[in-house]
Each structure stands twice: as structure tokens, then as C-alpha cells.
Image (cartoon, rainbow, N blue to C red; front, side):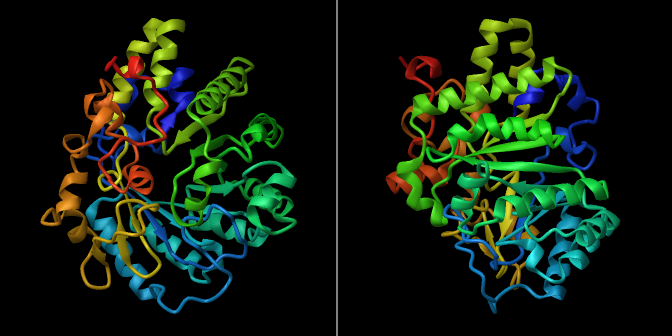
Amino acid sequence: MIGISKLYCGTVEPSDALRYGRQSQRLPSHLLQFSVDKRPVVVWNATRRCNLKCIHCYAHAKDTSFKDELSTDEGKALLDDLAQFGVPVILFSGGEPVMRKDLPELARYAVEHGMRAVISTNGTLITPEKAQLFKEIGLSYVGISLDGMEEINDRFRGVKGAFQDALNGIRNCQEAGIKVGLRFTINKLNAAEIPAIFDLLEDLHVPRICFYHLVYAGRGSKLVEEDLSHEETRSVVDLIMDRTKDLHDRGKPKEVLTVDNHADGPYLYLRLCKEDPRRAKEVLELLKMNEGNNSGRGIGCVSWDGRVHADQFWRHYSFGNVRKRPFSTIWTDTSNSLMKKLKDKKKYVKGRCARCRWLDICAGNFRVRAEAVTEDLWSPDPACYLTDQEIGIE
């Protein structure tokens, strides 16, 4: 994650993270990416079932029952282990997590055991009653996916009416007093929607949005040709920074982040070097704390059937299953050569990544995207849009 509002607009200073000792259990959520211990945020795809048919779904979710999902008791055992391991945040995802009937029970259990519980949802099933229940449970945050305005979003979701249902879900969360934000996956089919999404963010008084770069996984692997070119990506990142700064300058600040392309960090820093050198120096320190991509280290994933992955996109490789070994044991078992390498992936990346002057603050970006395109998981991430001159190898 690259906090555009935090870094570009100056809403976070290096001293903010240092004040908490940079320990993940002590840091407030907006500073968690700067933790020093990198206890993993865990995405639990608690169900594979979903009521929509999103064309970029990494989980190949469907509106049908799957027999291999972890039971309630198995889920609680997982949460027990995560809490004891020091996991600061559990993110319930799917499929559509709201379709899992015991989600409230599991979320409550996580909160009672000291973790921050958040959900990633399409929002269409969040009724006023469910929103109120989530508030009572103590959910920290609800992230609702929108990939454009009504026509484009419904095309992505594969279900007419999904946009309006998601807006209702947003309003229901707001009325219940739950922090709610938007999630948007960028590609050629919807990049032109970003200005309207910023307008919507302001109109609905939504405090947070995450813009996700496309990762080639699941059904999203078929969208490689729909990913932005490097020049298009640069333009979009500039637009996001411009619109974020505009909101900030007008006294309507929002928390804006980009996700899944750590080239955004150096790109933002290089822009600030021209605009505000003093701030650029502070941003560089924060980017060093962030440490770039953390798949297999600062973020992990547990599938509906208990398999453990380096992140939610790396579904083709499992390190083990929580039905057989606790997540904490699997996550720290570096007898697995891939797990060992992911703990310090900078030693293993190849090509321009290995020579890049930003390697310490990017960590080689997304290995799963490199593997999807080149069949070599240590090759350069094809979505890195920085020039050879910008990375210092020309």
C-alpha cells in the first residue's frame, strides 16, 4: 500500500510512526504499513461463494455452495492462532464474506481476541440490520468494491443493479456509524471513471478509497491485455495525486491509497523532489519504513479450505493447510525454500529489479505478476512503469 494522502499531502510524518515504537500491535491502523516487526495482516477468504460474477475475481467465486470451507470451529481455531501470533488485522474476504452465515460470530470472536476485524465486500448484501450488527460487533472498517459508475460497475460485476445495491450498502454502514471506504481496481476498461469516483467519494462523504493496480490472477488473469500501459499508469497515478491534493487543499481530506504496485512510492517521491524537496526527504524515510511489497512477510492469505498463500493473489501455490498445521507454524517455517526467499526477496530478484536503486523501498514489487507473464517469479514485474533513468541503471 502507498498512502497517497499520507505521503503526498503530508498527513503523516516519520515521527508519527516512531512515536509508537513501530510495533504492529501498538500502531493505529493508518500507520500499520510502517511497522518494524511486519506481523502479517491476514486475508481470510472465508467463503468462495458470491452473489456477483466479477470479471476480475481472483478467487473464481461462484454463487454456489462449496463443501470444503472451514467450519465455524475450524475458523475459531484459526483466529485463536492468529491472535496468539500477534496478527494485528484479520480481513474477511471471499467470494462475498457476507454470504457466510457465521461471519458475525467469527468477526466478533476476532475482535474479542484483540484483533482488528475488517471486511472486504461488494456491499450489495449489507442491509440496515446487518450494518447495525457489524457496528455492535466492533468491526473496524468495511471496504466496498466499486469499479466505476453504474454502467461500468455493473458490467464488471456481471449483475445489473449491483451499483445501486452497493450504494445502499455504503449508506447503511454510514447510518450505523461504521467507517466505510471504496475499493477500485484500475484497468483500461474503467480508468476513465476515476474522476467520477472521486466526485462520488466527495458527494457521499466517504472517508477512504483504495485504488488497486490489476494483478493477473484468477479471472483477472484473462485481463492482462486490459492492463494499462506504463504511460497510462503514470497518468492515472498523477491524476490520483492531483485529485487527492485538491480535496486536501479544499479542506475535504480523504484517505487515498494505491495498492499492488510499489513503483508508486518512488514515482511519488520523484514528483515531490521537484515540487517540495523538504517533504520529499520525509517521504523517503516513510517509504523506507514501508519496505515495499510484503507478500509472504507482512501480508498473508488463508483460503476457504484452509490453504495458506503468500497473498490473496498467489493461489496456485500453498505453503500448507491450517487444518494440519497452525498458520503461525506454516508462516515461520523457512524450511520451505520459497517461504525463506520471500522473507528477503530482494536477494533473489533479477534483471532491472536487481539493479534498481529503489529496491529497498519496493522489494521487487509483485512476484506473482512477474510469474504470470514470464513464468519466472524472480523476473522483473512487468507492471513497473519507472524508466531505466528513474531507477538509476541508464
